[in-house]
Every structure is written in structure tokens, then in C-alpha cells.
Image (cartoon, rainbow, N blue to C red):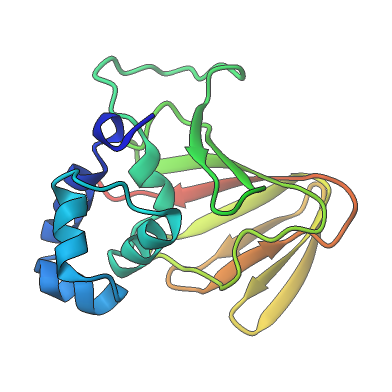
Length: 184
């Protein structure tokens, strides 16, 4: 899957304009040069995950939205063997979209976190409310300055604009189902 198929540039530009930001304004918020942002928006370069993460944070949008492919045929059912793979924030954590697309009022995502791994080095946040359910394993979530250990069957509400990250300190795989509100 390449940048053209994903239309990353178009998505970045659309979100930037929706937030009424100039390319220079987005550059200032991300630390990415205006020239590079322009190249990304024109699909001349494929941005790294870290660059996309910075852009997503600056635009207050979940990173996975950049990886969804628009499908004109709206489906209601997502089969277990045909989920959209949203990518990896690091080399081990897997993100899969559980909803057919991100056009509804809420998006569901499956996070697969291997033993002794974390979703990111630094906590990230977004301006949407999130609720997460641990479907297998034991995991720690860091929310701002607090940490909570969650076990299979536990859930947590993550308020908007709350920096957070997941840590799997166990020797077992962890699966987390996450629901994030969406703006329509």
C-alpha cells in the first residue's frame, strides 16, 4: 500500500484546512519543515510514522485515520479475516480497524500489544473521548501522571486531551478494544 493509494497528502491537507492552519502553522506545531509538509500534501514523499504521529497530534486527530482507505461501497459487517490493517506505531504493536470505516460517530480499533512492549515512547493524546476494553492479558495504562493496571474484562474511559500510553509488562500478548468518538 503506497501513499497514493492511501491519499495521505490529501488527508493531511484536508485536516489542516479544517483546523484553519497554514502549512507554516502546521510546521511550527510539528517541527517538520514547511517544505516537507508541502511535499507530503502533494504526495511527493512518503512520511515516516513519527512524522505522521506529529502531524496527527498537531491536528488533534487519531493517527489511524491516515491509514484508512476510503471505500465508496459502504459495508456494515467486518469479517475477522478482512479487517483493515492500520499499521504499526512501532515495530511490534498492531492496530486493526474493527468498524467498516471511520465515517460513523464512533470508531472501534483492536490494539495487539506483544509481551514487554509499549504503544509508544511518549504518551499521546487526541481531542476525542476514548473507551478501552482489555479482551485478553494484563496491561498498564499511563494517564497523565497516574498508572492503572487492567486485567482481562476491565475497561477504562480516557477523557479527551489526556496524554496516555499502553505498556505490556507481562509475558503474554495483550489485546485491547478501543472506541473513539468521531466528529461528523
